[in-house]
Image (tube, rainbow, N blue to C red; front, side):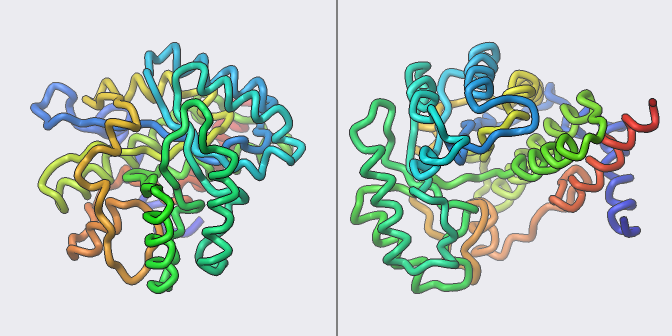
Length: 324
């Protein structure tokens, strides 16, 4: 690992030591109302490192119940129901809805818009709508797979934006993304390779990554909008969520965050924003800041996927090896 990652990791770990477990500010400090909705992508998702898909659904539901989270949104890929890991996926989706949660469109087959035509992409959305519309818990939201809204192709971006409006679908945007999918990937790979995993350090890294994403994007939004919007945090249906959601929610609340429903979050004024930026990909907060030429905050607690890999290898795996 190069010197830059070692230096950045040292800063991040110093922030942990100086400012508590996540380097966040004193929760007793006066704050604007900090609100966040939890949303989960890629339902049904492939098998993870520790649980079967059925076990994971049960554990996520129990975790949300134990954390007293009233409602979250699950973004569905109906095309995955026909895969081996999607077996009984419809029953799992029904279980989420029966518990009071909502479902929305994440496309049928999880395509990149930048690698598809607008026509094919909209047809894929329609296939998912055919499966979703009329079901209990349905919301008319569409979330772009990979948060890819056409990348550098503005004509394609605008064609899909227009197509969504014609279909009565709103953008199921996110304002904060902690790349939990990457940490899941690292965990699955370590498990398959028989590497010992320090679960305490894995929990700490999972929580730190999501909290860092939330605090980073909140500061970016404040610098851009002059306020903290109702945030939408991107998570995935992972074994890590099944294991650590109550701890993550507790950490959010400790640092002044109030968990709200996706319905409330998507009533925020930013829901109508359509930033015109050279490269349409990523969080809404990032695109809005780019459009207004607002520089991102410099924060040692922000973790890229490269940094997350480094911390996973040196703390989650190496720390376990060092104790044996």
